[in-house]
Length: 349
Image (cartoon, rainbow, N blue to C red; front, side):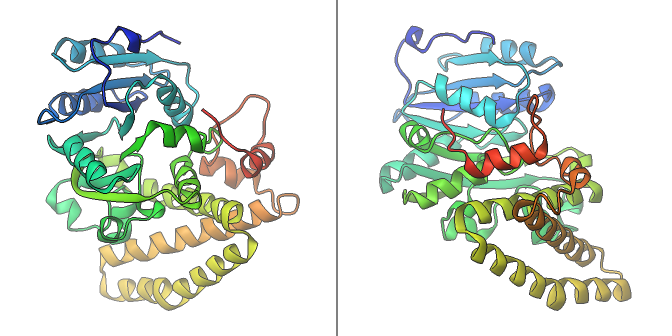
């Protein structure tokens, strides 16, 4: 691991550490860092940027070095680890953060100039130890117009209810700020799941009873390459989401709640998704067709995931679980071992 600049060497300890985890996205990282270096503080707080490189093999070090030369008064630190997954990298960032608060921004996002100010302002006004912002898709208008609410959510956009009714389900580590002590008390991020490790964290946050707040004007723009909004990519995301959600519900809410979720999903499929798919076949509505398919793919992932989580000896589904990319590979541990580890673990930073 590359040693970062010590926080003790900073002229003044920052109030906020902006944590950016990156892996082989040098081009988009350059845009993200440029936007983060231009954050308005209005003299209310100080911040630093900490980049954790999860073993990139592209020009990421050069991009960070170039950004550091433009950083001016904003400290920009960089640390590199061997590729261990985004959750492991975020835990490294939490250990190295020197701010009382830690704000998360992804390497494929561009932050509005008032993003950090709005998070800070809402945290001060509400006293909440966790404040989430709004993620907006930065896509061509013709692409956006062809996407329904399900598709937009799959691609990472915040829905209106996410900032009107703050809940753990509506938060995302692409745009959120915590007190560092809260992250430490909850144990950081699970390093088992490749997908939904942040949702796992937010489940623990909700169960612990911490207050949440939402800053709808704290906006980041999610910049997606064209392959990310293709049907095949969204299918894989929705299948994985369903499998992960089944495990999360079982772990935190128990078997009765999972059974209810499966029944509810069956009703949605029968009354909404299948009829919707038939209508789109008759009318040629491509947007509605994708919305229906997303519902069916999610249901498939949820049902098959439930069988895997509840009855792994009978329904191991090794190929499906492996293809879904649910788990980040661990040396010497197969997917059944990782399943047991996830259901029993208490993560720690």
